[in-house]
Image 1 (tube, rainbow, N blue to C red):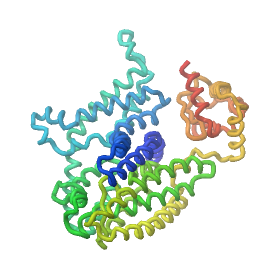
Image 2: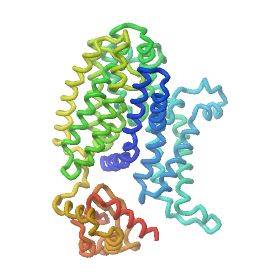
Image 3: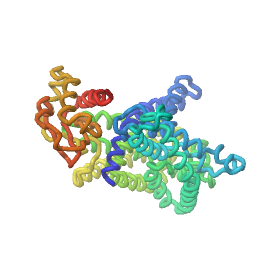
Image 4: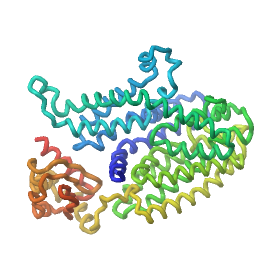
Length: 485
């Protein structure tokens, strides 16, 4: 189970890498519009960023389908796209209304939130399974045109028709249950706010946090925390209590967690971890968009994500208890924090900075301790780290200096693995080729090592890894070309 989650976590890195840039664009646009309403540049930047952030479900469907597919072929991405379009259209407001023969306004609100990350991830996983299963299937001559990789998107669409049928009955039950739960805890004062903060983060991977948000942030049961705060209406010290506690987490806590993950990354992976962590931490601090950071570890180290959810709940509870309030129109980042100072209903918002500094220390110390103590597989700490740094560095330097020809190396490695007759699948991580073979006895390790690679690791009866270095992607691409031929 844990291995499957970590594999999914690695697959998520492709769509996650896009998000920091989108978040920064949207944040800058929102900031400009906050000081100059109707500003053309602000609107342009905001729309550029939200065009991506508003399609997270689609990005994750395509990205996960590619990441989990056998050979990273474009047909896998198409399968993810087809599957996502099918399921989201079948459980959309208009389709459900037509199926039930009722007015669209009478359809359960759950179906207005169908285009979310959870649906995207599920679609990506199913689409990758369909691609891996059917992309090599040969149909009878009469249907030969639809054989192989053309069959995968068709089967993905068919699978998501079944998935939509299940969601048609299950999704509104779960959604409505969470709305009822949110209504219940709204009567618990500061404790209820803390519970909301905890479940808000905990439900992010499923997309069901929207159900809770509708209770507290919008006018589902009359709280309308965001609307009332932005309008300067309500009770000072109370209105904004379901938003304020997120500022210390998004501006300070999560960036500190990113620093801890960078500091605990393996030496050979620090540069790669730094590039992701820096961009994601800045997006979280500046704009309050946390998905780049959260998705970078929520599947790789789910226990750590639960800790993050608990700390978020604690932060929201503390801010609500002391009635430190602030609010946002976009998200709980620096942009909205600075804009909220002009709002007369904000109450001691500067105290959120002090709270944030305390939570930064807590996040850093706790994340670093847990990662090291339990060897959690956060970015830069997965099982694909090379053991022999000296050999790996030498290999990298040789490749960068052009002393190794990738196509020649790939051909020799592939031949040493036994070629088409023996190789079942080819994948790669940051530094290694990860391969499945039919017969390990048919593998010629000496021939593979003769190419200059730092090492060969046999990790199972049919699983083998070839350590290449950080240029492994180019070798993997050449092997894919050989397999296609």
